[in-house]
Length: 450
Image (tube, rainbow, N blue to C red):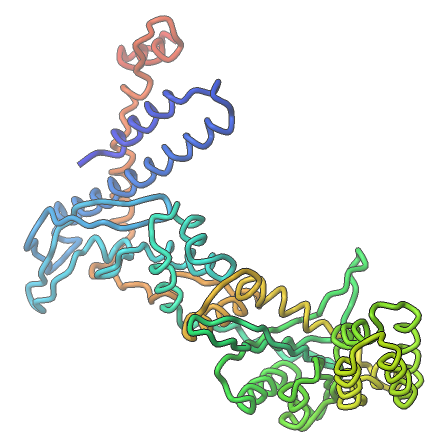
């Protein structure tokens, strides 16, 4: 068993071998490699110190007897692999068996990944692919399959409910992403954002005050809207006391929110209308301006006549014109609410939210998901975007130590660690004409010849 001093000396020897003339970047890179090795060896030394302490102090492990010694264990950590030996104990009365040192350092039975690393892998997986997450968290020392398995172990995560807020107007942005599955399907996980009226910060950038995200996949629409309603009531009180606006592209499940919540009004997202108008007018700015003016004047008949003229003059295809007229006719109330001065419809940004929250991880690059993995990542990503943190406690509860950790034990272990540092050799140097050597000789000669 190496002592802490031996581990530290070996680390310093390796550091002194590095050449700064190879460049600062290369020096730091190689130094980080050596530090990772050092911290792993240091962990091994400290664990084995604790194991030796328990063996030498029967009072600290009252009732536990050694059954076997020298049993090895490997644990993958963020800095690398940790390999150590420890003793296996049996309790005289209960007959229970345990690796006491494992329980003291919070390593669970059969655990291959250190729980802190497992949590970090899950945090990274909400932003990057499984493979990239492994590279960023532990230099790729675990497989992408392992990362995926860890994400499915996360449980008990929930944003703490805030106190009731005073707000008279609440907005819901709703949209969906199109995600490819491994079996060839194309599914659409839903995203909803609850927020107060849009504001601007000091740099004139718009933001959504007190935004709260909700994801939904493989869930009945009725159940999803029920969750939304419960979340609004927990934050702002009864739905009857707030003015509610539901923004979206006009999909039936979005407009149905007004019916399911029995409150609110639907607001059509201008982004989708703009895309339709661009297709119908073939990008002609005068035509585009004319349609927007007709909308503001509540003149749907004028728009129909104009679109018919676009079709007749072959500015757009007949099917394109027909689809546009059908779209705005079905959502005309959601368009007119933009111009109603008695309403506070505000702006819609559902498409941008989906792009930022979902598409960036789920569909912006070629991917193929399975149902369980898709739901896991969407839920975790939304949790993190809501300000939540994935911690080791979400991977598993802390293992309760089999022996009591007393202040006396902590102090003795601290003193034992300091005792390994011998001041008489710390400054030992073979170069006789250096200050370090002079200090070393002064200490060993018990005088003050500095």
